[in-house]
Length: 263
Image 1 (tube, rainbow, N blue to C red):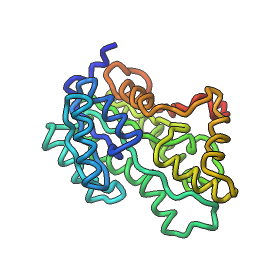
Image 2 (cartoon, one colour):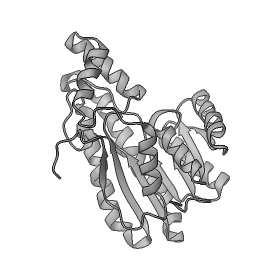
Image 3 (tube, rainbow, N blue to C red):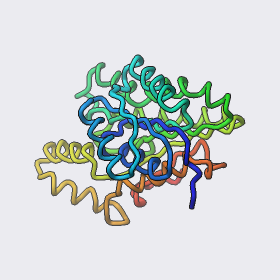
């Protein structure tokens, strides 16, 4: 299927590795021009080199901490300068620290809000005027199944991620008439650095090895395996493409049937 992404212009956050890297690869494979962002200069430059080697197309790397308003503004300015505009925004940031409620002070709560809600609301505000003028836009948030159901030890995510889902649903209704579609992607267990870190932390709390924890964690996935980041990339590429004409305001789990929610 030709997704019609050739010539479309995308920003992908958190793209130095993991799910963001996979999304950037999928968009580049489909012919989009891509600006990728991450906090560490060496990491995002290395990712740009790897993506060029894999796809044959080099994305524009930008060093940006998406919890910082000035970095978000610079990212969008760079995208407009290098690509002439933005058709697609894929908002993706790291997750907040894990741990029980009383282990977190105000600074962690503020970080959780800045990571989850602050980044996507500000970036959306920065790209929407041009999208509305051109009558085309696609916005996707990489959220988490922690936005859909409670996960042990992730109270910061469980509190902040649903706010992103609510924002996306409301925004989707507000701008649907401008042919701008907004969707949330909710990954389950993908063996990224984030999941490995969480596994190590939760294993230490329980006095077991990381390998034992991961074995238990993966056993709760009916498909019997963790996800492949490329699967998130493929989903994001479709949702952000002109071939998606009617899916908007959705929170789509991609989790091998791990979640038990009905709605």
